[in-house]
Image (cartoon, rainbow, N blue to C red; front, top):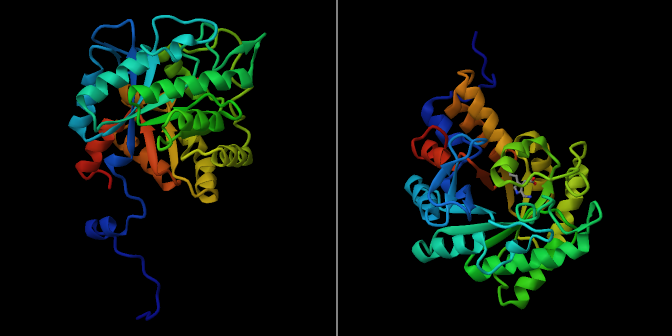
Amino acid sequence: MELINRPRRLRRTEEVRRLCRETRLSPDALIYPIFVDETLSGVRPIASLPGQNHYGLDSVCEAVEECLAHGVTHAILFGLPAEKDGCGSSAWAEQGVVQEAVRAIKAKYPDFYVITDVCMCEYTDHGHCGILCGQEVDNDKTLDCLARIAVSHVRAGADMVAPSDMMDGRIAALRSALDADGFQTTPIMAYSAKYASAFYGPFREAAGSAPAFGDRRGYQMDPHNSREALRECALDASEGADILMVKPALCYLDVLRSCAEAFDLPMCAYSVSGEYAMIKSAAAAGLVDERRIMCETALAVFRAGANMLITYYAKELADAIRQGEIG
Ligand code: PBG
């Protein structure tokens, strides 16, 4: 029987699949996290993140060279300082670990795009993301410190700052401090919808930033909520954020989608340490195909509305894109 108006599915040949992709990935949209340890000389593997390294200031350029070899041109820097104190003062030291790392990178690779994570938890002896008043973080006292950190990073040559602390008013504080210092054009990527997540476990081991007491639920978001993320994004947008971020990625794709639809700012997703470590360990146990899972999860994040992705798999993903495993 001949059915004239029968709806037909597009025949999914390889050419048609390539033509009709709704989501396209590019190495340009990938950001690689680099951990710099002030006390280290050389390169040391990070036990909690198989395949990732701590770099000493003498070897941070090696991390950049590896990125460039894979076609990754953007990184976000995290610092492990030699000294910690109650107010995290090494975070804004002119000769601090991140500041020196930025200078070292920029001296050799001026075109490599350097984003710095702006937070205090790696620098305070109590591991919280701000200045304490008793057992609580004092939001407003912390703002001055965050602004000093951001300005010191940008003075050292950082291209963009990414505050991850979740204090109220930090975007406005950073924006006005940067403007006052002559950095009106330096963008701010706001960790806007940052959830109080168990997926940061391997990072905290890698960065030595686990809180000494309590947790971060007072300032990070409650995983029960998605509409609250819209409010967090709205606040950051109104204070002058240039890019909004949802973090973690995979468990919060609904949040990513709704923020991407609600705001006209570029959206970043952070595929965090626990997401990476889960894939790594399942693959090491022979349970999943690492390469395909890596590709599929990255696709999911972009399909949900991300314009860029911070991921420990940035180099491998760039290879997969170039080799046509994902498009
Ligand atoms: C600093 C910060 C954290 C991460 C990025 N910046 C940890 C935290 O909030 O405890 C987590 C990144 C990851 O897990 O990969 N505040």
